[in-house]
Image (cartoon, rainbow, N blue to C red; front, side, top):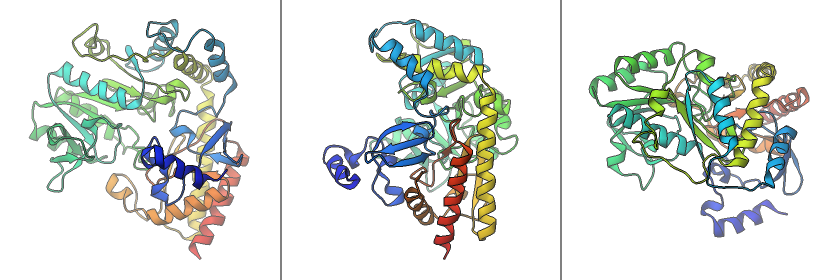
Length: 427
């Protein structure tokens, strides 16, 4: 089957031919792949061509595709029914496991996506504090709810404007935009809008502008600023949760957030999200408190079974993280060695199993620096690697994910192909 022909069919019945924009491959100037199946570290397209997968469904496939225990957890429960719109045992088991693992999370509410988790956490922060404004960071992505689709205005960082049609100026004005890794920009906003800021929301590792680690003390200083100004600190751990380590970024960086949001990793790849935090905050959520949030499919029994299986495996086998970290470091070192050998401008950022490569001489520590990367060169690199059977993120500003199923042979092939491709692009 021809991918291009199928894509043309898709474009007639779906906007852009896809159900999520990055899948359209527009950032790399090519036609999207249609994937049919996956196993371990590999995905297979509709023509059964094999690729080493570093997208991993954008993060949740930390143990590898089609993991037998996760698959078994789903097949064991399927014959009971797919959805009840009622309370189930698996919801309780999942919530008990998460609150026993994650620092500073006493209660958790299941939802259906990372976007919904963030939207709900922001509403909760406003309801708990009685304040309206939220600080986010340029280049950090928190889903597509209206209040998060804002950017810094051209006049000054403190003036926000909609980043999408359909988002009103009224919504945008309550979201303030700061510079990632720059606590002075946050402090200025707190001073300018004294007593008005409900929360600061941040990706502890910015994984939606490539991969940009927090500078030393950045997260700690955010915690201090929030405490000083009676605001909540929200960690968006849709990417980092249960991936950096079992306790997520809070444990990894030893910084406590007031609220934490999660996405698909807690469903083993099934559609799911969650938000959680300290008991006194979470008790503001309905039906206990006055902050309304509901969802018919929240806590879906199939998603809960898959997620519980994955988190249980990770919790009981924490050495998995050491193995993934070592595998990712091997890839990072290989990229750097190739760049040095070929005298190519390449910045390689890594935090645990998250890797970002930028074709720039700059040290990438914020969104402005990330944008100095040569995106045209990345597009050529991506398409050439695809021909080599390596599936990377189809955008410069996305992360590469290493899973427990990636082997030394996978890394060797990836580095061999990288050197071959970059040597050709340089000449």
